[in-house]
Length: 119
Image (tube, helix red, strand yellow):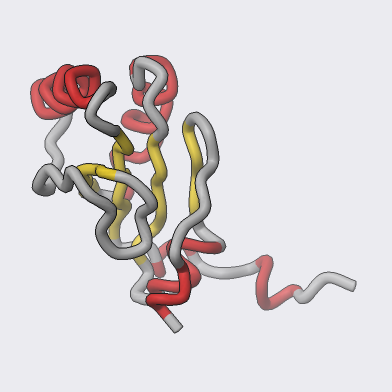
């Protein structure tokens, strides 16, 4: 049986999105080209380069923060232009565990997150 409360959440709960572009030492030049293209094309807030795993992320990454109205434009663009990189995107609702576990979109290979940091 399906819980209707779970299926009727108001999308106004979403205050923004974070996309995390994953890279390693070998793929960092591709990540840099993608970062430049994102900054040129979209009005977003770019996070710092994190060459080592930080928070729940299993590898180096940088964050791209964007508003809900950009989702329909930036996610399809990333799907076509990510150049083989994995991009983990999640909603921002204020519930960090659910945002990373339940409200996620993966472009590329899904990876295991360290979700225990949110419990």
